[in-house]
Length: 92
Image 1 (cartoon, one colour):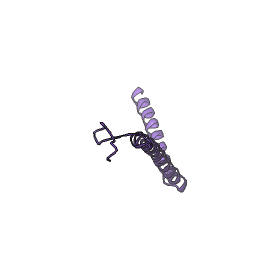
Image 2: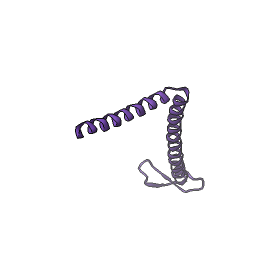
Image 3: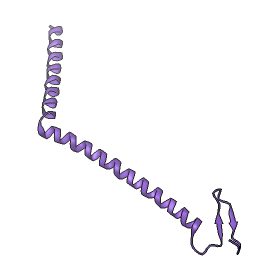
């Protein structure tokens, strides 16, 4: 008797799980389900592109600041490629 109740409960649980999975699959294949999945992916890509844009903007800003420090108008010294200052003479 207890064995039968166990199999009845296990069958009911398995049946409920199968129905749940079938409904999820059915909903995923409807136009609305497909649109939801596509929208989710687009939002993921949009977020990744925004993060990339922020990173690139910051890097460009840092490089621009570095170049302005190195080549700012009115400075009397130039920096060579190895960042060592080199004084300008009147002959240059």
